[in-house]
Image 1 (cartoon, one colour):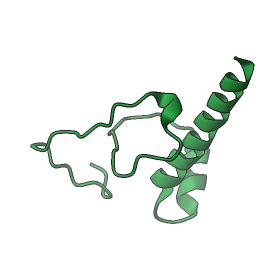
Image 2: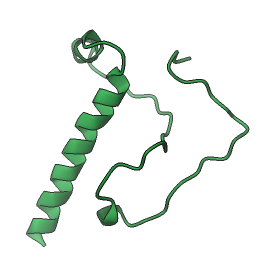
Image 3: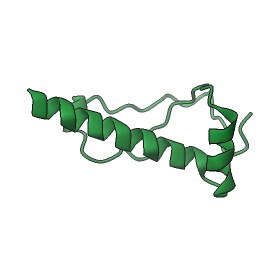
Length: 76
């Protein structure tokens, strides 16, 4: 199990259901545990910057998502 996360299995997951376009800033504290396969060299690069590599990966993915949404909204 991930050292950064201590599960609390008995607690319900709180989700904010809003249209994806309305989300302008990250929703703090709402996380989903997933398993993802990454290239070893890329994972080592993120880890080499120290603790918080999962947060950094999340931020890169969020920036990509925001850019894709902005591009899609400009096309409409």
